[in-house]
Image (cartoon, rainbow, N blue to C red):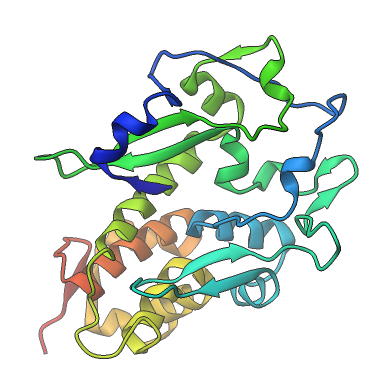
Length: 262
């Protein structure tokens, strides 16, 4: 989910979906375009996407990163983007695409889950939390938009089991927005502090070991109820990772992570 510049709202108004707006869409194997949208993609993965996919594939988060993603630090950016690697064939298909459709459908990434709806985080003046703005933006080849089935944005999110995904995506968007400014006074995103932040976001298994098996709990007091959750629930651990990034990189104070006095 990208941050939307308020200055761009007028330009984007034609594609914008209001909260109670309606759009027509249905994807099925009878369409001539079926699976065409799963080719040659720049598919950005957020941390929750990576968590769901590595769990679905039965691999560690480190293995998932090594096998399935490209980590790209673009010029003038202060945190890397994570993109799903496409298959090495002529059409550069998604590695999880089967003839019958998506092979990881129940755990498909957020972008795929909400297609053909796109979303952005709009930060309005005087407000700390962003507002989600939705757009109906199918590619020209998409035939599903000519089907008769109609949806509201909320109805589509519910139908696609996307409520939790949107919550986690928005939490990450808030963290990622902080990186519009350079937090690395010395070094870069490739330095030790940058690698720590990346681990907390994308390498959930390594982050869990860092929290539970290193000296972390000797140095920081973690709220008891939070500690219980992160030991058994990777969703809770990922949220804790976002909180740790805010604290470790940006110095945002939290009651859940308090340095112990020496």
